[in-house]
Image 1 (tube, rainbow, N blue to C red):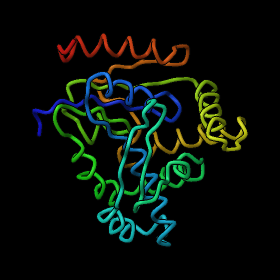
Image 2: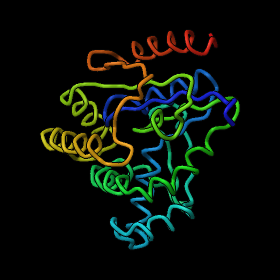
Image 3: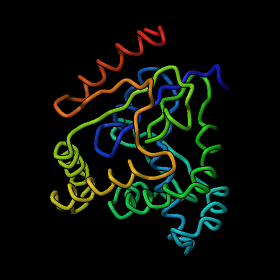
Image 4: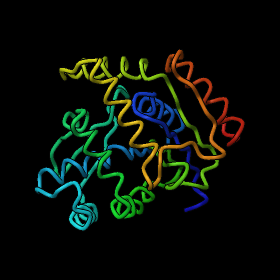
Length: 228
């Protein structure tokens, strides 16, 4: 399916990848892939089926049979996620689930087991893929690769507001610490570390609204893909 266009959007937590992915995909009429959600779903499934987060064999077997479905919300605020016919959208957004997902994502065998599942999202007319290694590992031949960045303070504030809207109680200082630790873990892991692809377009979202980010990205889409 190499003739099916893909736009990859990589970056750490809290930079606005998810919101941009949903908006861009809606604008283009394309499919979406939230790869981070897949790892979070696997973490939840592991908890449900009592599989340890360091049990590579057990996690790989679970990954191969993972029953997961994604459905963007009508207002594009988030994606509704179903695991084994249960809505787990709320559980996926907790910091505990995020930390567990980051832990199992560092396992080589687990990443390999989920690779084919992620690539299967590449369907006509195109795909906008959100993650941490979309442009470096999963879709290295994507014609347009984006890497979003933002300060830790800005990302913690965004995450705080997001969780507050979902009525999830969290402390912003704890969020900053967790984001910093997660960044370190993601950037230094041996397998598929969080780094921009050599041909990625870097977009710093610290002082930008989502509309401003979208405008920059649409300019890049017009340049790279000649779609607009």
